Image 1 (cartoon, rainbow, N blue to C red):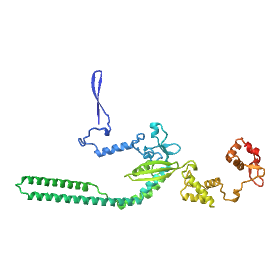
Image 2: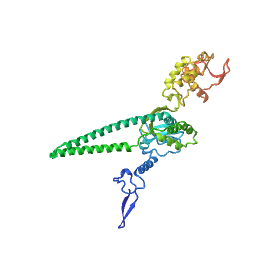
Image 3: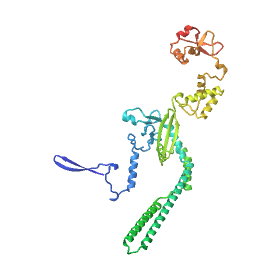
Image 4: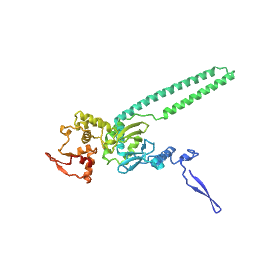
Length: 419
């Protein structure tokens, strides 16, 4: 579309033609096939859609852009489950999907900041499952069901045509049997006959258009099934190698089946992810993510209670750690439960596996740091910290009948008061 601009300079009128592109949605009038075209209208719309899709309008939340060589595989497809806006990629100390739409518009804090790698890995695994032979069986079942539905609809249309043909023949017989001298009745029956023929003609044309021009769904041939099965088997291996398939190609593969991914950090250690596939089907999964400490886990108290219960039952730290993993518990930074984690929680609650551990060391006339910490209600680390910085003066003393040394304090009230 072009526009004309009328310019007046020093009394001289001049008309200039400016090439001003008007967006298609603003066109007021369009007349198709008026002049010979370089390309068809369908091709034009396809090109326009590609151009719009390739333009990464993140701030305006419209398109997902073209695949780029960045590490984030779901670049341009991730949406915020909190506010619904498109999430962008941040490469600072790792890969993250962040929702900064509200921050840019209103200066509010980030809506969400989701670790990218765990989400990408889980989505890729589901993508591989979608290429498995099981999906081919599902496709075959869908095609079979669709064929049955089409047959039922076609049968109903044929019955409708039979009914219209009967009505047209009935109207014809009634018209032929009427007395020609009775012109009013003959005229009315003739109109009924013409109307019946008109309805029959329309129904026949609609039936022909529907069942001759509509492409029929053809089930996959055995050759195509073999190809798809080979892809399902070989693609994960090629994907991990990273040499045969580039990062852009991986993203293209994912976009061929995935429409968008919606993420929501339901808890600090869990991201709820909803994958919307091409065609409208959706898959919802919960993805565990790393946290800074054990207390940040949503099930931290439950796991601690489980450790206490199993420790009192006499199970070893190794057995407890293994049982916790089988039950679905994990550590803050991964899926493995460390034996040291179980041991620290067990000792914190005063549960000992050896009888000697339950008897604290006692030196006649002296107090150990563990004993003092209980008397003045502080942690042993508090005392160690002040010994290291010189606030508390103490020296290591050789323990009697023992190879180790320890900090000992006189067992007097003055020591307690000073500390």
